[in-house]
Image (cartoon, rainbow, N blue to C red):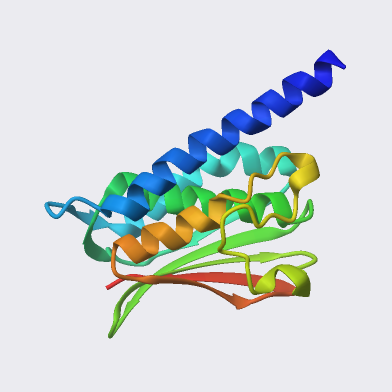
Length: 178
């Protein structure tokens, strides 16, 4: 009984700690004096930080970012969005499979794609995957805020976040930034 209470408390704490910054970002956006950020370097650093979690799950992460991809933005929020995309991919990728993060730039600006293999996104969740509290892993601690934060960070930077390919075999999330 005490164990259940502790689990519920930890879950509520995770929800509140994710919801407060998300609400603040949606209400105020990013600082107008945002810095120049190399999104390629940020993706490499974020993948390096996620490598231990990936190894524990039996998956590998690769980053394909051949050159610097510059944008004006908030590096803390951009890192958080990348962390959430990679964490989501790690949770939904079976052991022995790979996750690929690709950072490029096209005529509209920087693009980040995170591709993973696995069971994909269930049809019942696809339309609301970026909404608050939409989760496919409530029993294992998912709060349903990770992809909502990704969408809010993209929007705060004037961009978009989308589920490009719901899988299987490959699930692809894309963030476009101006």
